[in-house]
Image (tube, rainbow, N blue to C red):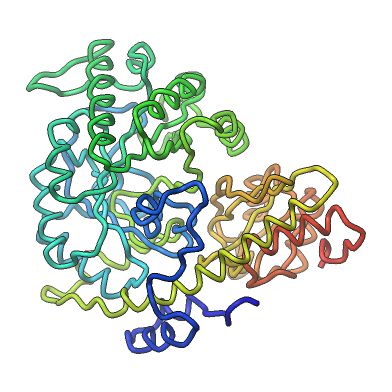
Length: 493
C-alpha cells in the first residue's frame, strides 16, 4: 500500500523549516538513506549517489530537485550561429540569456537567498552566459565562495569545451563532479557551418581550422573528465540539414569517450532572437522530428530527454523557472544561510521516492501484462513530485510519456502558453496547444473543463482528469490497460 500522500507543493510553499521537519518525521522513514529502491537497476550505487539529486543528470530527480545558474561568466571564446547572448532580458527562455550579470560576491548572495527559500535546490551551475571555462577566474571564485558557505550543494559547469582541458585538474580538485560540454560535430566540415570563428591561443581562427581545433579540444576534455571520474553530459543542438544526421556519429564518439549522457536539443531559431541561423531562416526541428531522431539513437550513448534549454540565470525545478523572483534588487544586502528547509525537504523526498518507485514498478508490470501490442503517447500536466497535479488551463508545458509493453518512459516535453487568461484569447491559445500536442493520444491533468476537453477530442486527443493527483506512471499504466481491455469508461471520464 502506498504511503500517505505528502504534497510537495505545500511543503515548498511553507516558510517554516520546523513544518518540514515535522513532515519528514511523520512517515515510516525519517532518514535520507531511504529512497534507495528508486535507483535504476542498470546503475551502480556510486553513480546513483552522484546523480540522484541532480535534476539535469537524472530524469527521476527532476521531479523533485531544482537547479540554479548564476550568470558570472559573460566572456566567450567562440561564436555559434545559433547563439545571441542577451544580458538584460526577462522575456526569453533560452541559453545565453540573463536578466543581470553577477560578480562572484553577488552570486554568493543570490545563492544563499535562493537556498533559504527554495528547499528543492540541490545544484549550482555556471552556464555562461558566455563560457565558464574561458571566464575561469570568475567561475572559480564563485564556486569557492559558495562551497565555503553551502558545502553540500553540487557544483557543475557547462562549457563549449575549447578551454576545458586546461582546467580539468582544477575541476577535480574543487570536487566539481558534473560537467556539460556542447558538442555539435566531430567532422570539421560540419563544424564550419555552425561556428564562424573561435579564439584560441591568443588568436582568432575561422573555417575548417577553427572547427578542427574545437573538435580536438572537446574530445581531449571529454577523455580527461572520464579518466578522473567526473560525470559528463554532452549537449548537441539538432540543426536540420546541417548536423542532424551527423549527430549519429557524434553519439558514437562521445559514448566511446565515456560520456554519461547525450542530450540532443532542438535548434531555437525564431528571428526575433537575432541569431545568425534565425535571421537566415534556418528552421529547428519540430517535436515529432526530434523524438524520431532521439529514438534512432537508442542503444548508443544514454539519452537525456527532459532538458528545458535553460537560461543562464535559471532558478527552480526544470520547466518552472523562478529566476525573476531573485534579482539583486529583491535580495537583502546581508543574509545568512539557513539549511534547515533544504535538509528537511530531502528527508521528506526520500520517503516519497520510495513510494513512487514502488508505484512505477507496479505500473511497468501492468503494461507488460497486456497481451495486445501497441503504444500510447500521453501528455501530462504536472507541477512536480511525479504526480498529475496541474490544471490543464494553468499548464506551461506538458511532459510526454510513451507506454508500450516494454515499459513507460519519459520522451520529452511540449511547451505551451497557458490556456486560462481570464477570458481573453483562450480560443487562440487552445488552438496553439492542440498544435503543440500533435501526435499525442491522451492528456492527463488534475482538472479540465468541458469546452477544452471537447475541442481536444475533435482534434483526436482524449483528455481526462480522472487520474488527478495520481502518480504519473500508475495513471498511464491504468490507461494503457484500459485501452486494450473491455472497460473503456475511464477513457472518456
